[in-house]
Image (tube, rainbow, N blue to C red):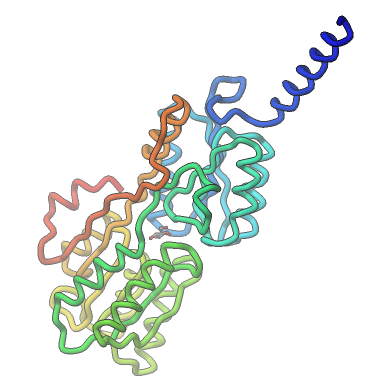
Length: 323
Ligand code: AHR
């Protein structure tokens, strides 16, 4: 009988040690602080990204979370290796903003195996719902559809569209580009240029438009997938004496709605700016606090976003912007 009891005790100890190998997602590390790994895209990708990083840092500090932020700097493979490292360091939560939408299955599985909740922010990744805990993202195709519907409402005699896409392969670029490509097909519009700018780069966008002008390509719509690239396009048109905006020959459509860009909308230089809200810090804090409390959370949450038209925007709207 004694042998049986000691055998049972040994087995119990073995199982309890094995269980320790997996993190309990609802508890923080020994220091009591929740540690969150954030896999960010690039440090200086855009004014939007700067506001996004600031939002995480400020919200996490206020919440008493420890943040471990790593940057891919335009390199998907670097993001993957940084994410794997954070899993090794046993962060309590892993928040990913992907340079690429595809290629995250192994990281998500490793996080799951380690008992670390995998959260997507900003940009949805190509992952089965079984592989992530929650998503707080923008619906980028819906943003693009807003712009397409606005352009349709302008009832221009012709639509010769320059598409300045964002960095290739993330859900922001994919969704916004798809919306315009589908819109052009449905409405019989002509896309005269459709290229993605590495790193969402303003200078590359300016050069692309300058080259189009120098090459004699006719266009009357700029569809720039973020504010910085729209500003680059405007600089190229300024240099060539081409008018744009509210009273110009070329309509300018931008995305993000940074405050500086909304000032340009108010001045009539951008015709439309579709909001993509970067303030994910408080959203992720709320999500993690619910998970820490053992509450259920929406697995898929899309950010509510607005759009701003130069014919209706006001100074009060511009002044009220928080990024
Ligand atoms: O994922 C959001 C996009 O990434 C923004 O529109 C762009 O400015 C940023 O770099």
